[in-house]
Length: 143
Image 1 (cartoon, rainbow, N blue to C red):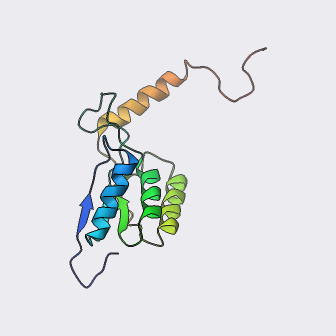
Image 2 (spheres, rainbow, N blue to C red):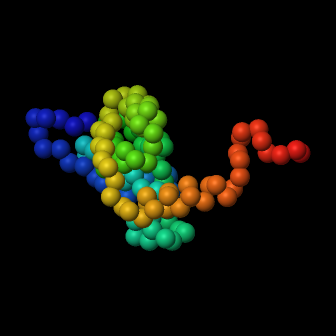
Image 3 (cartoon, rainbow, N blue to C red):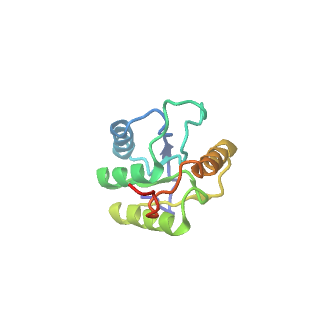
């Protein structure tokens, strides 16, 4: 856990191209080496190859929940969680849940986001959603 009476050291591990088993092992190793903090990125695409179809990262908050359940001392958090990726109430609930699962070890970093390609991809997906048709509104036609 982070302490104010000394210098704290942390490890940042981007989850691109890593499975959860690897992330868990890295986090547990950092904890065993007495590091104070383990952070992961909050991105939906591979930062080295945003248009690529491989090595996409694990989702930040579900990864943190799994790490919280797999460790006992090290503080955990997103390097910075983008406020624009999730509804604020959902993000607050996710963070609260990770904090509870971890026994109060969450360090919550939040920011506006910076990777334009991630926002443009979402805009394209939303723009194309109208061509998919109605979903879950009860007007799927006469079956």
